[in-house]
Every structure is written in structure tokens, then in C-alpha cells.
Amino acid sequence: MSGNKQLTNKVVSKEYKKSVLEFEKSDDNTVRSIATYYASGVMGKRKYKSVRLMLSMESFESKPGKRTSISIFKGCKVPKLLTFSDLLEQLKKIDIGTVHEIDPDHLEGLETENPENGAYRDLRQYLPMLAKFYLSENSKESLKVFAESTGTFQIALGDDGCPFGKNESPKSFLVSFLNVGRRVASSYDNFLIFGANCVESSPVTKKYVRSLLPQLAGLERAECEFEGIKCRFKLEELPNDMKMLAILAGELTISAKCFSPFANVSLADCRDVKGTFGTESSNTWKPWNYQQRVNVADKVKALRRVAVEKLSEKTKRSKIIDYITKQNSRQEFLPVLGSYIDKAHVEPLHLKNNAWQYFIKAVLAEAIRKSKLPAGCKKFSELPTESPVAQVITALQTEVKTKHPRFTGNDSRCFCHNFMRLIKWLSCESDSRKECETVLALA
Image (cartoon, rainbow, N blue to C red; front, side):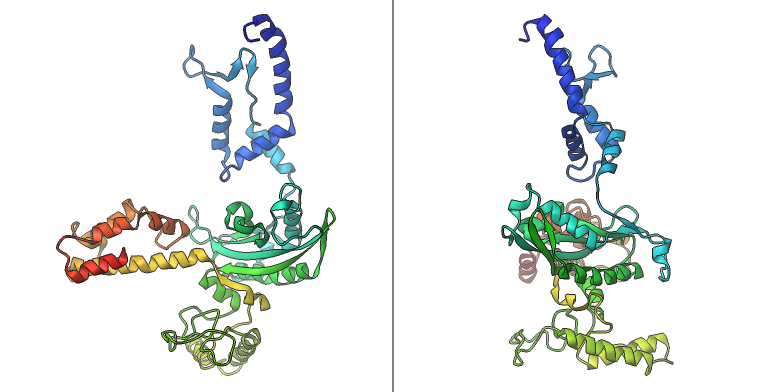
């Protein structure tokens, strides 16, 4: 057919042009353009325009600097993605539910040191929308613990810091369904419900967490129906880091004498290798009982109101901590999420972060010991360049390529792949037997 130029130019190209124009205005091309824009994260305006240009245009050989449409053969150009302005118009038409802004009205009555902004969702509207999506024909087969006509969506609700740009401490909350199986670990199955440039202990964060309590209670009482399938919602997991768990539970920090948000383990008995954990009276450590949490929080509230009313803030704080310690507890306030605090678990990512943090502390301690630094050496710039500690720190920046002073998920991933590069600079031929054993233990 391509050998018949008249047929190609007058018939095939004419019909092809018509089909291409129809496709470029079709829903399929809209979906294609949106999928391209959100592939592996949001592209942004400049990158989307560049991708659109590269997929449909090529350099004009006879005119340097000029471009022409890519053609299968003469008169048959490849279909283009939507222009960025048309793409935005299509995105605005998609129903994503109501996103509430953290504006001055929302901040009224809250004591905030710095201007805080962000957005959040109401779970009572958002979770049914997600359920409807997962119960659609495309996703229904992949759901776990769902029968033909009924099922319960098992909710996982967690938070984490999300530093980006100039903001070092933004806070986010994510929701997901455990019913999606292993995909719950994927970013594609975790959905943002709160994001703001504030820390965990901010009044803005606490206000949102308190608002979740009636939302979750209402969702668990209700029953929804989508396309003939009845479903319910139930909170099953609260994966968070230890700092946030202490805030959610209304507890003292993890540096307290009773340091665990999960059980009555204390600094006095945590090294007991024969200790047991369970709910029996014979067990050394037992999980915190919710009613016990409430009782201690009520006592602390009464103490704060009466016994320490006239003391200075520093003395008052010391008295309250001593009182809580004597109660063999760490509870200061009522749990922000009520009895849902019993669903709390440590998010595995933070266990990995903490493990690598202990590793680097041990590596630096050994490097400093072997370096035998002079007493007057107080700054990094004063370190001898050939010393083990200087070489380890240089490798940390240039070979392991960690960019953040605190351990994030990305830092942990870098350590998983490159930690032996630090060991290389920590060891040398003149090491004693004990020093070699230390290096081998770290490796």
C-alpha cells in the first residue's frame, strides 16, 4: 500500500488524519495524557511539556533548530497528548471530593508560633469514595477478606514527616486499606488525608487527630452499599513512629522511666533476660490497659489543677513527671484517639531507621577512638584529613550519599546498599586483634 503514492496521499492519509483528530479529542487520549502526567509521581508543567514534545515532534533536518511532527509516513502524524492547558481543564473535572483548607478560620483559637497552612480531608466522605473505587470491576478481584456480597474494609491510619524544599518538618497523615494485601506497602495504595507545614506536637496536628475520633466511630457504626455489595469500615492498624505514638496516646516522651507506649517496661527491668511478656499476672511485662490509662490521666489532671497550681512551670513539670513515675505509668493526658490507641503499632520503616542510626553511632565512636584526636580539635574543619573519622565522614557524604542530618527512609536505603564503604575506611592494616573484631562485628 505504501508503494501506491496516490492511494497513500489521497485516501489513507485523509482517513488517518480524521482518525487521529478524533482520537486526540477522545476520552482515551485524555486518560493517556493524565496517566503520563502522573507516571511515577507528578511531572509538573515543564516536564510534561517536554515529554509531549519528544513523543510527537522531531528535529527538522533541513532547518536546524526547527521541529516537525513525527509521521509514520507522509501525511500520517502520530497522535499528540493533550496540551498542558487542556490537561488542567480535564483534571479540574475529576471529582476528588472535598479538600478542606487550613485557613485562618481553622486556626482560630489555636496557639501557633508560626504561620501554618495545609489541607485535610474528612474520612466520612473520603473512605466511601475509596471503597467505591476498590469495589469497581477493575479492582474488586484483588480485595482480600471480601465475600460476594459483603465485607469489611480494614483501615490503616498512620502519619509521618515529609520534609521537602525549605520546609523541614511538614506533617502528613495517610490512609490505606489492608484488604489490598501486599500492595498496602505501595505509595499507589496509600492516600493523603492531611498535610501541613507543622510538627507532630502542633495544635493544628492535634486538632485534626481529635477530629478523627468521631469520624472513625461514625464510619464503624454505618454500613454502605455499592453495586449490591454491603461493606463496613473498621480501624485495624495505627502504624506510627514512637514519637507520634506518645502524642497520640497522651503519654510522656520515650525518654521517660517507663519508655514503651505498648507495655509497662521500665529502665529498671528492661535488661531482665528472663522476663516474659503477656496478659497473665505472672508475666513480667503487660500491655497497657486502656482503663488504666484513663485512671492515671484523671489523677494527673486533678494534680495539675490543685496540688501544683502555684508552682513555677519548671517545678510543676518535674512534680507531674515524678507523680506519673510513682504510678508506674507514662500516661499524662487522655489518649487523643480514645480506645483506638490499642491498635497502635510501630511502623517498620522507623525500626530500620533506628537500626541504622545505632550503626552509624557505633561506627563514629570507633572512628573517633582510633583517630586519637588532639584535645583542641573541636570542629570538623580541624580534623586531620588522614584520620579514620575524617575519612568516614567524607565517605558518608560522597559514597553513601546521605543528605539529611536525621535518618529518613531514603538515608536508610542508602545505608542498606553502601554501608560497607564506611567499614572500608574504618579498617586498616595496623589494626590490633580487638580492633579487627570490632570492624568485623560492624560489618
